[in-house]
Length: 139
Length: 375
Ligand SMILES: [Zn+2]
Image (cartoon, each protein chain N blue to C red):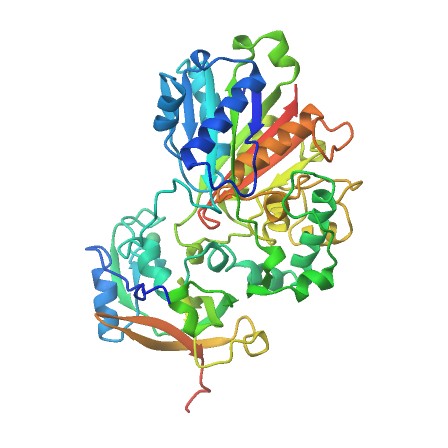
């Protein structure tokens, strides 16, 4: 053990709404009201030129875009290895780095484009959005 | 573009040098480049580097008229060449010294990088366990493989091809030939990446001297390399948010600018260096450079086209995977291109006269390109 605590995000004034939403277990994106584009972190101006950007709630559904299975993590994450570090693309089009949980860290269980849905990892003042394979409709 | 590289050299030791600090490695790289160019420090009026060019200039007794400390990661040194060429053309400097030194393995004289939980990466990547480069730079690789009908064998083929080069390079850190099966059976670091698909971690450095032909002597010009074209760009700071690291990316924009400036066709390129911190970068880089069709680079590499005797020699020192990788490899990619164009390389490509160098930085979020030619 390194003795180093697990890294916890510390909001800046720009990102505070994102992390406050996580406390309510809501995943939000910074959406452009002009063209609908968005990103996980806040922007000053959208690529379309609009400055009308608002934090908007996401459905929490997405697909597995890409990933690696981490076998040699930093010491602070050693107990969790191997774990699945992934890029998830939300159905709103926003991509984010996250974890895939509740599934073996085995490529055969992790086909790309698999449907995933939101889960939460509690980290003190904030909650960390992670994803798991989507449950079938209605279950 | 009317710039020439008249001095190029690496530090004596590449590998383990715990007795040398980061500053010491920069200074050694600079002094060796000056010696290679036949210059005194007093003839240098511009300095550039990713690690305190201000401090390097002072250590060398240089009083600069121009300083560039651009640091976007491993491709910074390609940008320094580009910026130096522009500064010289503008009359802001006549001879620019670019240095690199990093104690990537021994961490001697390395400024510690504390976690910054308020940074973009500290908020949106590190809490998930994404901090070492092999957990971030590598994230889009599987997408690229999947979209092109490839699997991890394509990554192993890159290692196989580059070991064919490094096995001929005495200074290379990893010189054993490997088979695809051996690469795939090696210890996983971050699947699909095994140890040989991940760059080395070394101490070392190097230096370059850039000037314009009118400021150089006949003797300096005899061994010089011409900078034909340059490009640079950047993407969002978080690798997950790049529009498409393998396609519509900083690397493609930089390459398009560099080739437009160089005014030569892709088909005229005889040698390529692609920044390879990880094994997915050579095929993706070849495609971004426009030297392989989209999705077609892996097949070229597997067919031996980038190996010794092939039509497009790639990473002829063995690359960051097998030659050396101090943390910011870009300096060494330029050094190998210069050696090839001077016809002084350990694994020399016969008769080569043009080279394209592609650098990546910031975990796939910045890039720069140089098109170079034998003068
Ligand atoms: Zn917009």
